[in-house]
Length: 235
Image (cartoon, rainbow, N blue to C red):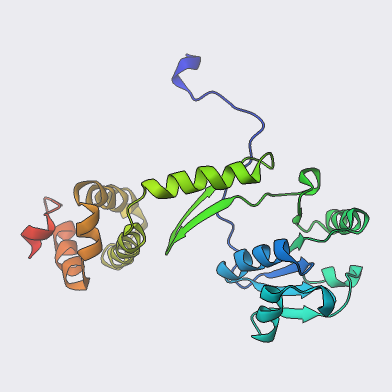
């Protein structure tokens, strides 16, 4: 019986796509590591505040401050900075101060990441490949960030260059399908039909698909047979 089910492999992390759009992310520090954390948060449409003396900002962080991409508090961290924070990313070269930030976050139940201190992290940052809506993350659970980068580059090298564009079109088709078939009970049929499109159409066809093609294709969803014609047949 046990062979029918996946084996439990302990020691991993729960890898999820954390939605932080419009959430308040507090970044403590302004160096190279902080710059990377800030970019991750901005790419996820978060509202970012950086706490760091101006003299400690590197060129990238200083640029984002000057452009108004992030808010800046020109001093060292103080406990009051945690008010209203939904997430804290700490990247400073002061172990004692970092641990203080960690303990305060635990008291306030604010998820936090203390750079390069795995035991003081509620979550880890992985190595990410980005192509439009496509994000592929490789995590070593804090054991080897450089190895994560190497594995991520190998994975990215195997992906087609137009994968992001194909995903954008599939996402648009999916939105249109929900308008055509909005009822909750149609969920299983919608999922099965979208899976059929993704499996039967080539990546190049998905990239080439335009809005007219989508509208024609959706007419087939509504037909009795629910067949999925090729792009050539549609046109």
